[in-house]
Structures are given as structure tokens and as C-alpha cells.
Length: 483
Image (cartoon, rainbow, N blue to C red; front, top):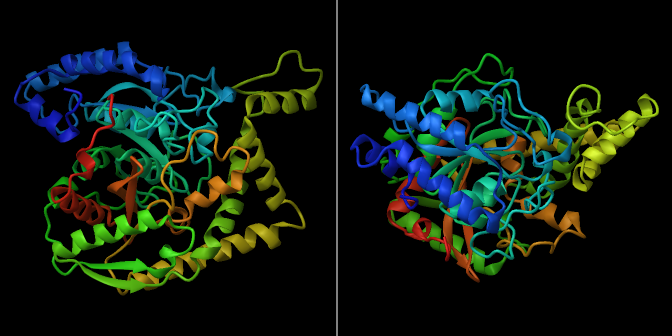
């Protein structure tokens, strides 16, 4: 049962080959047995899962149907879940139980999903390796000595290890796509505003976006269908009709114009990954796609711009965690200043403190124009590059990451080295574009991803291309040894 995709589970439940309750018990037992190796879960919700599974079975018995009705999933631990710990991977929120469900959680629950638990993540989604979590690092099931990527590494590791078929995740600078690449999954970052951020604890509000992590493009289409849509509670949510993503998977790629930016193939890219990307291009050409070289001239400025904008927004968003209203509070504060200082010093880890300090500096009087304002101007230039490129091509293709997953601890002493691993993913967040990573092969036994980017609200196009690619390749079917 654990090897089934979401689509296969939907067909099995519809054909009464098994019940949601039976499947849920199998997966909960598998998580209990195997997750100690991975540390991919922060909280398991066995009672809730079995209640939801029984309810889904009853709904099916009454004639209801739906691709997600009875499907087991997990939520990244920054989506608020009523009455259940929502920690953001931080000591600061270790004791926080959300009083309400995030819109993503409530929409998927209404569709009939079964929540198995909350997955581990980099603290407040700040990281590229899932090593900054207060609950410990997550291990990559393809090699337990390597990172699974971040910040959605818990969701990625759990799905890759076949502990569950799919999970929710979030992407601020690549945190869905990079872990997908590192663990041989398909991960989709939707257009900014496509999926509600209400109840999704913020890192950088103008960059964060929720999306699906699964093994196939078909499964991502099914999960995104349940997540997407306008939400009046979210002021950044966009009132745009949600198409039937599954229905659009089988479109022909004949004549599809694919742009390949020359800037993607510079000195920082592992040549073995470059070869795998070229192989992916050849596969898409066989399916009728037309390849064109393009240029994204401002890509080189994206990382410095991102690492000013994101910490600036983080320093503002995380100011609410002060030991007064909720979250960690230090013991026996002497006065209000001591309460703030010690609560925040004890509650936040090193990476979060680093980014708060960078952000506060960039926003401070005398430096705002030199750093934050200039970064926002670069952000506009990055967006303009994409708009110009999409006048010539339908999608943009390239590597998801410049290197395969690194060893645990390898970049801990040099945070900038980890930041540079986001070079191909952060531009989509700066511009608000949809992006998808899909499996493209292996380097030294570690998975590699190919990234696709599309114009606004063209998630269906990305899923269509990825699905057709996956019908003609088998990378996405490979399973890590031991799982």
C-alpha cells in the first residue's frame, strides 16, 4: 500500500480495494517504524487521522467521491492546525497549539484528506538543509548522511521514504523545489496569491507560497486542486478561477517553446547535473518541444537582493514573538526589557537570529535606501527579465540546484555557501512566478531535479509538461534503498 501514489490511492478507494482506515493504519505503523531514522515528523496525529479516515469511508459509503477523499497526507509544521502543536520547527513555538485551521488545512480537510501529522522543517522556514530545526536535522532517505533540502525537508523526506503519498510544503526561495530535487520528488511552487497564506506562519510575506510535494506531477495536480483558490481572509490572495489541473495533464507538447537561459550554465553548476539537464531537454524535444536559448541578465543580482528582502520581512514578522502573548517566555524576567531579550534569545535559534539582525540592519535609518530600496529595484529588474523572456517562450527550463544534496553539517560554518545553493530557485519568488521541480536523474546515487518556470497562473502548463515527461522517463519511480 505504501508504494501507491495519490492517484492510485484514489482509484483503489473508489474500487473498494481497501478502506481509508486500513491505509491510514498501515502508514501510521510505517511512520512509527521508519521515521526514527529520518526525523521527518515533529508531531504524529494518530487519533485525528483515524477519525478522519473513518469519516472519509462513511462519506464514500454514502455515495460521495473525490480524488482526495480518504487520502493520507501531512502538513508542514507552519500551517496552523486547530488544537495541535504548530511549532515552525522552533523552540519559540514548541508549546503553541493553534486556535484555528489555516485555509490550506481546512480546504484539504473539507476535501476529505486524512492528516497523519506535522512535518519537520527549518526553523521558521529559514534554511536550505533542514538542519536549523529545534527538533534536530532531517535525514535524506537516499543517503542518511546527507541533507534532504529545506526548509520543507520533513515533508520531502517523508514522501520520498514512502511514509505517505504527498504533503503540503511552502516555498519562500526554493523550499519546495530544492527538497524535491534532493529527494527525487515533484514539487510545485504556485503563483504568488494562488494558494492562501492565511494561517501559514509567515517568514517573508511577499515571497512565501504554499504548494504540494509528491512523487508525480499527477499527484501534485490532485493536491494543488484541493489547496488553490481565492480566500477573502488573505489580502494577497488573488481571485482567479482554478482550472481542472488533472484534466490538463495530457495536452500535447508539440510546438511548446522552451527557453534555456545561458546564465544557468555558468561555473557554479556541477557539470554532471548540466549533462542530466541536457538529457531532459532531449526528452522534451522528442515530445515535440522547441528549444531556444534565452537570457536572464539580472539573475546574478538575485541572491543579494533576496537576502536583503527576505530577512527584512522576517525581522518585521518575527517581532511579534516577544514572550508576552504566546510562545516561549523566559523564566523570572526582571523587567520588560529582560523579558524581550531573554525570551527571544532563548526561543530563536542561530539562523533565525542571524536573519533577524540582517533584516533589522537593512531597514534601519540610514541604510534603508542603500539596501532594502535597492533590493526592491533589483526585484523589479528580475521580474522584467522574465516578462521579456515569456514573450519569446512558453516555459523556462534549467537545473533546480547547482549541486546534489551535501553532507549533514558540511555548510554549517559557512551560511553563505548554503545561500548560494538557491541561485536557480529564488528568482521565481522575487517575481512571484510558478515553478516546478521534477526528477531528472542521479549523481553519485543522489537525486537531481530539473526546474520549469511559467508565466503567472500557468501551473497547469508546468504540470502538463512534467506529466508528459514522466510518462516517458522513470526517474520519478525510483525508491531509496531500505524504504
